[in-house]
Image (tube, rainbow, N blue to C red; front, side, top):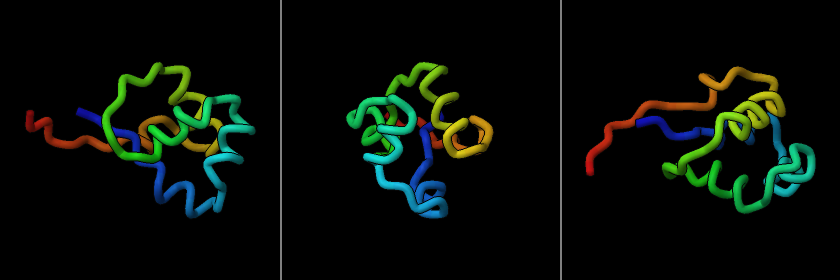
Length: 69
């Protein structure tokens, strides 16, 4: 399973979640979920929007974790 890992990217760029939401047009709830590190079923265009905002590739913001359910 993959999760979104934006925590370090955000701090490197020093953006608040509110600034990211305003700049990307994504909801504050979506931004909060992205930064929570939990699994959510994100749409590809959401990941593309975030990657574009941070000027990186989608694979730069995803990390693989063990799926232990």
